[in-house]
Length: 102
Image (tube, rainbow, N blue to C red; front, side):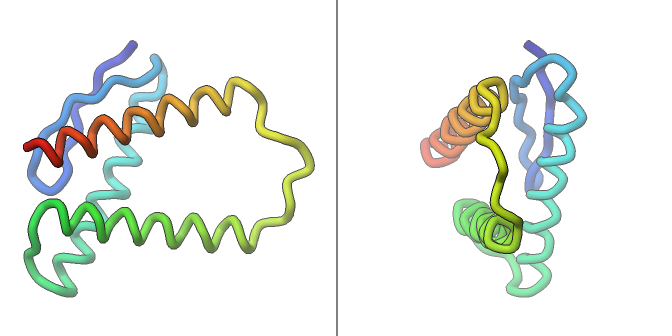
């Protein structure tokens, strides 16, 4: 398992990922950072939890729009993709829990 150090809103996090997925994880962190910077530009500085919540809502809104505008899938995601999505979701929950405990 690879380790990647990412920076979001000035905080540094070391996150594990599958070997070869390091650049993908860095791009995802950059997307979150971009959303946070947009929120800051619009409404000024907010608390860390609020910024992350708003960034999450922006990403969820984009995902919702993509899903609703995308053609219906022809087949179910393969088992490897499902397992990867489960791991990513579990890791995201761990990160969120760590932020809430901080």
